Image (cartoon, rainbow, N blue to C red):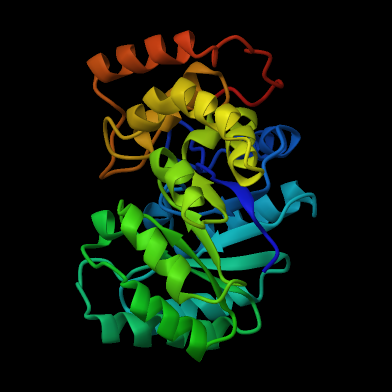
Length: 306
């Protein structure tokens, strides 16, 4: 896998009635690419994949690939807590032309052991082969941490497991991954606020929430760190640190969709069980977005506003 840098875990825009807002999604993809993002991740947790039915999920992945039109790689989320269901879905995803990488999070709710996670991810890797695969460790959402030793076992057992999105919140875990995995294996931070620390101990980039709102700036921060321009990287992190935190004032992606709605790029509609942020949170988000200059460009193409 050659991809490094900053990837956006792109939101899935909905209309007020909860249906997929295709024009808004296409506009977001174009804006992201024009802003210099390195790759896009469709239908991850920020993309509310858990609330999409199977047809919507595949359609959304296809839309992002078509809109990207080969300008950047498009990764596709494929996660389920029942391995048998996951493999059936993976077989469908494998038939979608243009998927660059399959991203899959720990099985949620079941709280599998390390061996259970190993067998789960190995089965998925065999199903999607020869597509590259990125495992996604996000114990805050799944209640199961994927230990570096297990990741190393997976990398040795399946040649197409080529990357990890690490969102355990532990800098020491990034260091352990760097020490235990082959140098060709790619490590991405799954937390905006730990991206620079992760790169400092060997990570290759970030899969970002905040780049939905500030793609050019977050990408510049990551490239600066990867190029050892640490003063520039730290200055950008200092500027946007409040946004990194604000995107999780309430459950992701409700805050980021609210900021995007304030920017005129899509509605703030989320699907139950998520709800839009409380009025007080929305007020704070609007103030912060204004202070960061995110609201200065409101020239959105016709037909995008919902």
